[in-house]
Amino acid sequence: MTPPVLLSRGIDPLLGIFTGCLAYYLYETNPRTSLPADQRLTTLVQWKWTKWQRERNNKLAALEREAEATFSQVKGS
Image (cartoon, rainbow, N blue to C red; front, side):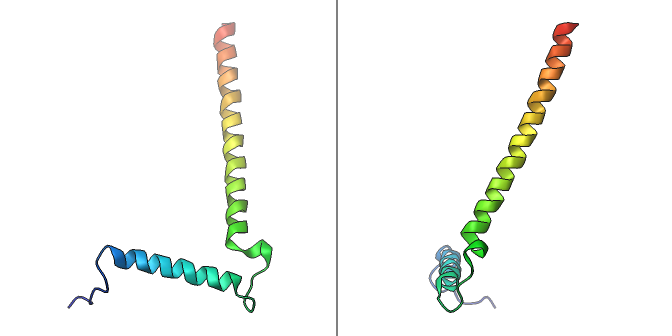
């Protein structure tokens, strides 16, 4: 037997996601359970995003150096 549907099959998952996000927001901003600023989700996401960009830029720079070396070898031949 399938469980009953609250609103509809499409809206139930959205309602669940919204409720979860709201609960987490209230958890982070509640004065009693407030997390330090460096442990909040936005700070952690910004740190991860910066780390990912730095790694991506390093990889792109390495690929550019490799392409320049290959071009100079082809051009010098």
